[in-house]
Length: 362
Image (cartoon, rainbow, N blue to C red; front, side):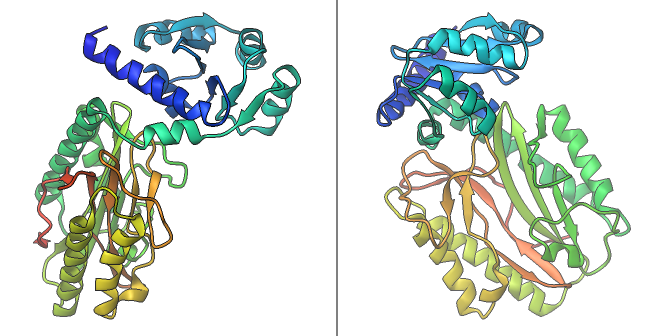
Protein backbone atom coordinates (compact mmCIF):
# COMPACT_ATOMS: atom_id res chain seq x y z
CA UNK A 1 0.00 0.00 0.00
CA UNK A 2 1.27 3.47 -0.88
CA UNK A 3 2.14 5.87 1.94
CA UNK A 4 -0.68 8.19 0.86
CA UNK A 5 -3.21 5.36 1.10
CA UNK A 6 -1.92 4.38 4.55
CA UNK A 7 -2.34 7.99 5.70
CA UNK A 8 -5.98 8.18 4.60
CA UNK A 9 -6.80 4.75 6.08
CA UNK A 10 -5.28 5.64 9.45
CA UNK A 11 -6.97 9.05 9.47
CA UNK A 12 -10.41 7.56 8.77
CA UNK A 13 -10.08 4.89 11.43
CA UNK A 14 -8.82 7.39 13.98
CA UNK A 15 -11.86 9.60 13.28
CA UNK A 16 -14.26 6.68 13.51
CA UNK A 17 -12.86 5.67 16.90
CA UNK A 18 -13.00 9.26 18.12
CA UNK A 19 -16.73 9.42 17.42
CA UNK A 20 -17.25 5.93 18.88
CA UNK A 21 -15.56 6.98 22.10
CA UNK A 22 -18.06 9.82 22.45
CA UNK A 23 -20.67 7.06 22.77
CA UNK A 24 -18.48 5.25 25.33
CA UNK A 25 -17.56 2.51 22.84
CA UNK A 26 -14.12 1.09 22.05
CA UNK A 27 -15.16 -1.02 19.05
CA UNK A 28 -17.14 -0.32 15.90
CA UNK A 29 -18.94 -3.04 13.94
CA UNK A 30 -20.43 -2.38 10.53
CA UNK A 31 -22.90 -4.45 8.54
CA UNK A 32 -23.75 -1.78 5.94
CA UNK A 33 -21.76 -1.98 2.67
CA UNK A 34 -21.17 1.79 2.50
CA UNK A 35 -19.64 1.87 5.98
CA UNK A 36 -17.71 -1.33 5.33
CA UNK A 37 -16.21 0.25 2.22
CA UNK A 38 -15.35 3.45 4.09
CA UNK A 39 -13.63 1.46 6.82
CA UNK A 40 -11.87 -1.20 4.75
CA UNK A 41 -11.93 -0.39 1.01
CA UNK A 42 -13.99 -3.55 0.39
CA UNK A 43 -17.62 -3.42 -0.80
CA UNK A 44 -19.37 -6.73 -0.31
CA UNK A 45 -21.18 -9.17 1.93
CA UNK A 46 -19.24 -9.08 5.18
CA UNK A 47 -18.95 -7.62 8.67
CA UNK A 48 -16.26 -5.06 9.46
CA UNK A 49 -14.71 -4.59 12.91
CA UNK A 50 -12.63 -1.63 14.06
CA UNK A 51 -11.03 -2.01 17.48
CA UNK A 52 -9.26 0.42 19.77
CA UNK A 53 -5.80 1.08 18.35
CA UNK A 54 -7.02 0.78 14.76
CA UNK A 55 -6.88 -2.99 14.27
CA UNK A 56 -9.40 -3.76 11.52
CA UNK A 57 -10.95 -7.13 10.67
CA UNK A 58 -13.30 -8.32 7.96
CA UNK A 59 -15.44 -11.40 8.62
CA UNK A 60 -16.57 -12.70 5.25
CA UNK A 61 -18.17 -15.86 3.87
CA UNK A 62 -15.81 -18.00 1.83
CA UNK A 63 -17.23 -16.79 -1.49
CA UNK A 64 -16.18 -13.20 -0.58
CA UNK A 65 -12.85 -13.87 1.15
CA UNK A 66 -10.68 -13.74 -1.98
CA UNK A 67 -12.02 -10.39 -3.08
CA UNK A 68 -11.96 -9.02 0.46
CA UNK A 69 -8.25 -9.84 0.76
CA UNK A 70 -7.53 -8.29 -2.64
CA UNK A 71 -9.53 -5.07 -2.24
CA UNK A 72 -9.29 -4.24 1.46
CA UNK A 73 -6.69 -1.90 2.90
CA UNK A 74 -4.58 -3.04 5.86
CA UNK A 75 -7.18 -5.49 7.20
CA UNK A 76 -7.23 -8.96 8.71
CA UNK A 77 -9.67 -11.13 6.74
CA UNK A 78 -11.19 -14.18 8.40
CA UNK A 79 -13.77 -16.65 7.13
CA UNK A 80 -17.17 -17.22 8.69
CA UNK A 81 -20.09 -19.34 7.59
CA UNK A 82 -22.58 -17.32 5.58
CA UNK A 83 -25.54 -15.89 7.51
CA UNK A 84 -25.75 -16.86 11.18
CA UNK A 85 -22.18 -18.14 11.05
CA UNK A 86 -20.86 -14.60 10.52
CA UNK A 87 -22.65 -13.48 13.67
CA UNK A 88 -21.18 -16.39 15.66
CA UNK A 89 -17.67 -15.51 14.50
CA UNK A 90 -18.27 -11.86 15.38
CA UNK A 91 -19.39 -12.77 18.92
CA UNK A 92 -16.31 -14.93 19.47
CA UNK A 93 -14.03 -12.04 18.53
CA UNK A 94 -15.59 -9.12 20.44
CA UNK A 95 -17.78 -10.47 23.23
CA UNK A 96 -15.98 -8.47 25.96
CA UNK A 97 -15.84 -5.16 24.12
CA UNK A 98 -18.01 -2.03 24.38
CA UNK A 99 -19.45 -2.13 20.89
CA UNK A 100 -21.27 0.35 18.66
CA UNK A 101 -22.80 -1.01 15.45
CA UNK A 102 -24.72 0.37 12.49
CA UNK A 103 -26.95 -2.72 12.54
CA UNK A 104 -30.64 -1.84 12.97
CA UNK A 105 -32.04 -5.32 12.37
CA UNK A 106 -34.12 -6.20 15.44
CA UNK A 107 -33.52 -9.95 15.34
CA UNK A 108 -29.76 -9.60 14.85
CA UNK A 109 -29.47 -7.02 17.64
CA UNK A 110 -31.54 -9.20 19.99
CA UNK A 111 -29.21 -12.11 19.30
CA UNK A 112 -26.06 -10.01 19.71
CA UNK A 113 -27.17 -8.53 23.04
CA UNK A 114 -27.35 -12.00 24.54
CA UNK A 115 -23.61 -12.44 24.00
CA UNK A 116 -22.40 -8.83 23.92
CA UNK A 117 -24.23 -6.97 26.70
CA UNK A 118 -22.33 -3.74 26.00
CA UNK A 119 -23.53 -3.32 22.42
CA UNK A 120 -25.57 -0.38 21.12
CA UNK A 121 -26.92 0.56 17.71
CA UNK A 122 -25.94 3.94 16.22
CA UNK A 123 -24.90 5.24 12.82
CA UNK A 124 -23.47 8.43 14.34
CA UNK A 125 -19.76 7.46 14.30
CA UNK A 126 -19.98 6.52 10.64
CA UNK A 127 -21.96 9.54 9.43
CA UNK A 128 -20.02 11.99 11.60
CA UNK A 129 -16.79 10.73 10.09
CA UNK A 130 -18.04 10.45 6.50
CA UNK A 131 -19.58 13.94 6.39
CA UNK A 132 -16.14 15.55 5.87
CA UNK A 133 -14.47 14.31 2.69
CA UNK A 134 -10.73 13.71 2.54
CA UNK A 135 -8.51 14.59 -0.41
CA UNK A 136 -8.80 11.14 -1.94
CA UNK A 137 -12.60 11.21 -1.78
CA UNK A 138 -12.75 14.68 -3.32
CA UNK A 139 -10.63 13.55 -6.28
CA UNK A 140 -12.99 10.63 -6.91
CA UNK A 141 -16.04 12.91 -6.73
CA UNK A 142 -14.44 15.37 -9.15
CA UNK A 143 -13.69 12.61 -11.65
CA UNK A 144 -17.26 11.31 -11.41
CA UNK A 145 -18.59 14.82 -11.96
CA UNK A 146 -16.44 15.19 -15.07
CA UNK A 147 -17.96 12.04 -16.53
CA UNK A 148 -21.46 13.37 -15.82
CA UNK A 149 -20.60 16.54 -17.75
CA UNK A 150 -19.63 14.31 -20.68
CA UNK A 151 -23.04 12.64 -20.41
CA UNK A 152 -24.73 16.03 -20.72
CA UNK A 153 -22.68 16.59 -23.89
CA UNK A 154 -24.12 13.32 -25.21
CA UNK A 155 -27.62 14.65 -24.50
CA UNK A 156 -26.85 17.59 -26.81
CA UNK A 157 -25.81 15.23 -29.59
CA UNK A 158 -28.37 12.46 -29.20
CA UNK A 159 -31.60 13.94 -27.79
CA UNK A 160 -34.25 14.54 -30.47
CA UNK A 161 -37.95 14.76 -31.19
CA UNK A 162 -39.54 11.30 -31.29
CA UNK A 163 -36.96 9.70 -29.02
CA UNK A 164 -38.24 7.84 -25.96
CA UNK A 165 -37.04 8.75 -22.49
CA UNK A 166 -35.96 5.13 -22.11
CA UNK A 167 -33.92 5.28 -25.33
CA UNK A 168 -31.91 8.26 -24.11
CA UNK A 169 -31.37 6.53 -20.77
CA UNK A 170 -29.96 3.47 -22.57
CA UNK A 171 -27.52 5.64 -24.57
CA UNK A 172 -26.33 7.47 -21.47
CA UNK A 173 -25.96 4.34 -19.34
CA UNK A 174 -23.96 2.56 -22.05
CA UNK A 175 -21.42 5.40 -22.03
CA UNK A 176 -21.43 5.66 -18.23
CA UNK A 177 -20.64 1.96 -17.84
CA UNK A 178 -17.78 2.26 -20.34
CA UNK A 179 -16.35 4.94 -18.03
CA UNK A 180 -16.69 2.66 -14.98
CA UNK A 181 -19.65 4.65 -13.67
CA UNK A 182 -22.63 2.67 -12.45
CA UNK A 183 -26.19 2.75 -11.12
CA UNK A 184 -26.38 3.77 -7.46
CA UNK A 185 -28.91 1.07 -6.56
CA UNK A 186 -31.12 3.75 -4.97
CA UNK A 187 -34.08 1.86 -3.47
CA UNK A 188 -36.77 4.45 -4.22
CA UNK A 189 -36.53 4.18 -8.00
CA UNK A 190 -36.66 1.45 -10.63
CA UNK A 191 -34.37 3.37 -12.99
CA UNK A 192 -30.73 4.43 -12.82
CA UNK A 193 -31.48 7.95 -14.11
CA UNK A 194 -34.25 10.55 -14.18
CA UNK A 195 -35.13 11.59 -17.74
CA UNK A 196 -38.46 13.37 -17.74
CA UNK A 197 -39.92 15.14 -20.75
CA UNK A 198 -42.86 17.57 -20.82
CA UNK A 199 -45.41 16.92 -18.06
CA UNK A 200 -43.28 14.10 -16.63
CA UNK A 201 -40.75 16.75 -15.61
CA UNK A 202 -43.26 18.08 -13.08
CA UNK A 203 -42.55 14.95 -10.99
CA UNK A 204 -39.20 15.55 -9.23
CA UNK A 205 -38.52 11.80 -8.97
CA UNK A 206 -40.16 10.76 -12.23
CA UNK A 207 -39.66 7.23 -13.48
CA UNK A 208 -38.28 6.86 -17.00
CA UNK A 209 -41.11 6.02 -19.41
CA UNK A 210 -41.75 5.20 -23.04
CA UNK A 211 -42.98 8.74 -23.70
CA UNK A 212 -41.44 10.33 -26.78
CA UNK A 213 -39.93 13.81 -26.73
CA UNK A 214 -42.01 16.43 -28.49
CA UNK A 215 -41.41 19.93 -29.82
CA UNK A 216 -41.84 22.44 -27.03
CA UNK A 217 -40.83 19.99 -24.28
CA UNK A 218 -38.59 20.80 -21.39
CA UNK A 219 -36.59 17.69 -20.46
CA UNK A 220 -35.20 17.26 -16.97
CA UNK A 221 -32.07 15.06 -17.03
CA UNK A 222 -30.92 14.12 -13.51
CA UNK A 223 -27.75 12.03 -13.56
CA UNK A 224 -26.93 10.34 -10.24
CA UNK A 225 -24.23 7.73 -10.69
CA UNK A 226 -21.53 5.98 -8.70
CA UNK A 227 -17.82 6.13 -9.54
CA UNK A 228 -15.35 4.10 -7.44
CA UNK A 229 -17.98 3.84 -4.74
CA UNK A 230 -18.85 7.55 -4.58
CA UNK A 231 -22.01 9.22 -5.88
CA UNK A 232 -21.92 12.26 -8.16
CA UNK A 233 -25.20 14.06 -8.83
CA UNK A 234 -26.13 16.78 -11.31
CA UNK A 235 -29.23 17.93 -13.20
CA UNK A 236 -29.74 20.01 -16.30
CA UNK A 237 -32.99 20.93 -18.04
CA UNK A 238 -33.03 21.05 -21.85
CA UNK A 239 -35.55 22.57 -24.28
CA UNK A 240 -36.59 20.74 -27.42
CA UNK A 241 -37.59 23.32 -29.97
CA UNK A 242 -39.31 26.59 -29.17
CA UNK A 243 -40.79 27.09 -25.71
CA UNK A 244 -43.05 29.87 -24.43
CA UNK A 245 -41.75 33.11 -22.97
CA UNK A 246 -43.25 32.41 -19.48
CA UNK A 247 -41.48 29.03 -19.49
CA UNK A 248 -38.18 30.70 -20.41
CA UNK A 249 -38.71 33.15 -17.56
CA UNK A 250 -39.34 30.29 -15.12
CA UNK A 251 -36.09 28.70 -16.28
CA UNK A 252 -34.15 31.91 -15.63
CA UNK A 253 -35.71 32.13 -12.16
CA UNK A 254 -34.42 28.64 -11.28
CA UNK A 255 -31.03 29.47 -12.74
CA UNK A 256 -30.68 32.61 -10.62
CA UNK A 257 -32.01 30.83 -7.55
CA UNK A 258 -29.34 28.17 -7.94
CA UNK A 259 -26.68 30.83 -8.42
CA UNK A 260 -27.75 32.53 -5.18
CA UNK A 261 -27.61 29.19 -3.38
CA UNK A 262 -24.08 28.55 -4.61
CA UNK A 263 -23.00 32.00 -3.44
CA UNK A 264 -24.45 31.33 0.01
CA UNK A 265 -22.35 28.20 0.56
CA UNK A 266 -19.48 28.81 2.98
CA UNK A 267 -18.08 27.15 6.10
CA UNK A 268 -20.07 28.00 9.26
CA UNK A 269 -23.20 28.95 7.30
CA UNK A 270 -26.32 27.04 8.38
CA UNK A 271 -27.87 24.75 5.80
CA UNK A 272 -31.24 26.40 6.29
CA UNK A 273 -29.73 29.74 5.26
CA UNK A 274 -28.57 28.24 1.95
CA UNK A 275 -32.06 26.86 1.41
CA UNK A 276 -33.49 30.29 2.22
CA UNK A 277 -31.27 31.98 -0.37
CA UNK A 278 -32.72 29.76 -3.11
CA UNK A 279 -36.28 29.56 -1.84
CA UNK A 280 -36.78 33.26 -1.08
CA UNK A 281 -35.87 34.24 -4.63
CA UNK A 282 -38.34 31.77 -6.13
CA UNK A 283 -41.03 32.90 -3.68
CA UNK A 284 -40.45 36.54 -4.60
CA UNK A 285 -41.09 35.60 -8.23
CA UNK A 286 -44.45 34.03 -7.22
CA UNK A 287 -43.37 30.43 -7.86
CA UNK A 288 -42.84 29.49 -4.21
CA UNK A 289 -45.60 26.86 -4.10
CA UNK A 290 -43.97 25.10 -7.06
CA UNK A 291 -40.62 24.56 -5.31
CA UNK A 292 -41.62 21.37 -3.53
CA UNK A 293 -38.43 19.85 -2.16
CA UNK A 294 -35.36 20.85 -0.17
CA UNK A 295 -32.54 22.78 -1.82
CA UNK A 296 -30.00 19.98 -1.56
CA UNK A 297 -28.37 17.15 0.32
CA UNK A 298 -25.03 15.63 1.14
CA UNK A 299 -23.45 13.15 -1.25
CA UNK A 300 -20.76 10.54 -0.79
CA UNK A 301 -21.15 6.79 -0.47
CA UNK A 302 -24.93 7.26 -0.52
CA UNK A 303 -27.17 9.29 -2.82
CA UNK A 304 -28.59 11.24 0.12
CA UNK A 305 -26.48 11.58 3.23
CA UNK A 306 -25.68 14.27 5.79
CA UNK A 307 -26.04 17.19 5.70
CA UNK A 308 -29.58 17.98 4.56
CA UNK A 309 -29.83 21.41 2.93
CA UNK A 310 -33.39 22.26 3.94
CA UNK A 311 -35.31 25.06 5.66
CA UNK A 312 -35.33 22.98 8.86
CA UNK A 313 -31.63 22.12 9.02
CA UNK A 314 -29.61 23.82 11.75
CA UNK A 315 -26.45 21.99 10.63
CA UNK A 316 -23.55 24.31 9.91
CA UNK A 317 -21.60 23.72 6.74
CA UNK A 318 -17.96 22.81 7.23
CA UNK A 319 -14.94 22.76 4.96
CA UNK A 320 -14.83 19.70 2.65
CA UNK A 321 -18.45 18.68 3.03
CA UNK A 322 -19.89 17.52 -0.31
CA UNK A 323 -23.40 18.77 -1.06
CA UNK A 324 -25.80 19.50 -3.90
CA UNK A 325 -27.64 22.73 -4.67
CA UNK A 326 -30.73 21.95 -6.77
CA UNK A 327 -33.72 24.31 -6.68
CA UNK A 328 -36.60 23.62 -9.01
CA UNK A 329 -40.02 24.69 -10.25
CA UNK A 330 -42.66 22.06 -11.03
CA UNK A 331 -45.93 23.00 -12.74
CA UNK A 332 -48.31 20.00 -12.54
CA UNK A 333 -49.19 18.42 -15.90
CA UNK A 334 -47.04 20.96 -17.75
CA UNK A 335 -43.29 20.94 -17.07
CA UNK A 336 -40.51 20.82 -14.53
CA UNK A 337 -37.23 22.70 -14.25
CA UNK A 338 -34.30 21.71 -12.05
CA UNK A 339 -30.67 22.82 -12.12
CA UNK A 340 -28.28 20.95 -9.84
CA UNK A 341 -24.57 20.91 -9.12
CA UNK A 342 -22.50 18.88 -6.68
CA UNK A 343 -19.92 20.95 -4.84
CA UNK A 344 -17.25 20.86 -2.17
CA UNK A 345 -17.68 23.37 0.65
CA UNK A 346 -14.81 25.86 0.82
CA UNK A 347 -14.63 29.60 1.50
CA UNK A 348 -15.19 29.73 -2.25
CA UNK A 349 -16.97 26.42 -3.01
CA UNK A 350 -15.64 24.06 -5.66
CA UNK A 351 -18.51 23.52 -8.12
CA UNK A 352 -17.66 20.17 -9.66
CA UNK A 353 -19.80 20.44 -12.81
CA UNK A 354 -18.78 22.67 -15.71
CA UNK A 355 -21.62 22.00 -18.15
CA UNK A 356 -23.48 25.19 -18.99
CA UNK A 357 -26.52 26.27 -17.01
CA UNK A 358 -27.77 28.51 -19.79
CA UNK A 359 -30.94 27.15 -21.37
CA UNK A 360 -29.87 24.84 -24.19
CA UNK A 361 -32.36 24.36 -27.02
CA UNK A 362 -32.07 21.21 -29.09
